[in-house]
Amino acid sequence: MSFRFSPPSSLNRRSSMAVSPEAAGSAIRRPQLVTTRGKLRIIFESEIFMGRRLSHTDAVIVFTTIANEEEAVKLIRELLDRRLIACGTVQSGGRSIYRWEGKIADETEAILMLKTRSGCVEGLRRAFTELHPYKVPELLAIPVTGGLERYLGWINSETSLTLA
Image (cartoon, rainbow, N blue to C red):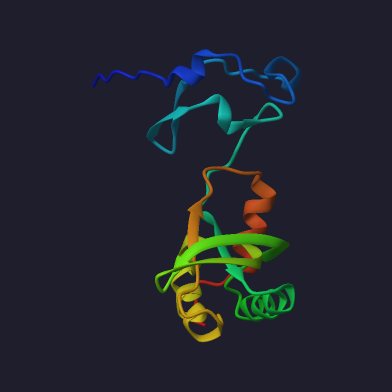
């Protein structure tokens, strides 16, 4: 079997990491081919943190917005009770500018960053239909491509794949 791999041009430039690869320990300067559980993978420098390879995961970050911090906390607590998320972070003072019903709206909102795993997204969708006060709530699930093993394990242990 043979294949050709052309790294993006950004890999040819020196990275502006806070910790240099040399200081972090085992530096990976070019993509490396490795075998994990019988599968061939390409490891990039971005998958290295403090000299250690990041664990791969099914974790996702779900973004949503809501009118204010009080409603945000209420939603997060309900999602935690249902074990649909491991953590919810509220960032107050977000500003959303969007088109709604033919007009441009400009609103201050709280931004929520919900940490969960991909198997919980469907449960979150159902919960948003029931709990989220917006007619069309934002629910954007962004896959996490790697992370620290202990944190990723914590996300898995705090969420449930059973129907809520």
